[in-house]
Length: 98
Image (cartoon, rainbow, N blue to C red; front, side, top):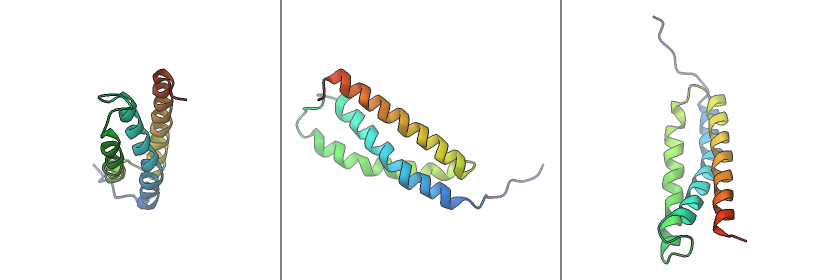
């Protein structure tokens, strides 16, 4: 059985993790802000949400090299961004955001 070699597309995977991982982390933090305990108006929640963005982004960035190709990383993270922002928009609409 032939052994798979490491593909030389780490640049596109890194690009996907940096450029598409940040908005994904931001959208996930926004969803937590709206749906999490106490809703959007909970006191002291803003600090937690703000500081949770970077660990979420780094989690995405650290796992982006598990994709088979850079193209697949771009596709999956792009779709994840679109879904996360659609869910955030839906949550905000349901919650009565302006």
